[in-house]
Length: 209
Image (cartoon, rainbow, N blue to C red; front, side, top):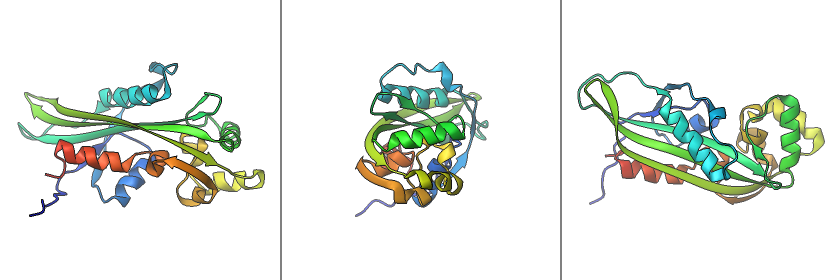
């Protein structure tokens, strides 16, 4: 007999990323947004790229502003994530600081880039007036891609995509899909959240029970 999937749980998402929110909507994973006040500059950006994104996801988890529980023993599932790209010369590409920076990052991506997307998933229980971690799963997924936008298309892309809000100014979904020349690895990780690995983690932590 097949196990019945339960979608009664709501995932608490500590992320402002429209790409992560869209991926969860498309996967029909119910979620609600929770605030976090993490300062990513406090993380060590000199570490290898997989460690940087993992540390930022952990840092966000530590700085979530969760609502109080409503009953002793209440369970919640909380997710944070981070995505960064890295140029072939090793330069880490976060979100663009401004439009000129976005254009420079877009041109840099024509040569190809490496990307890491990390998430931190916790199952928490409300006990004695506080949330306590019962279980944690962390994952980092790497991908490589070539994002090739000709000069005459860059301004149009920035107007019609969410590139100004994404790592490396690269938004491979929606309007940007037509400029994604090569992908090696997880497509959804490039978008902002490795969905196959997340679904497996949600199943392992009891979200679908």
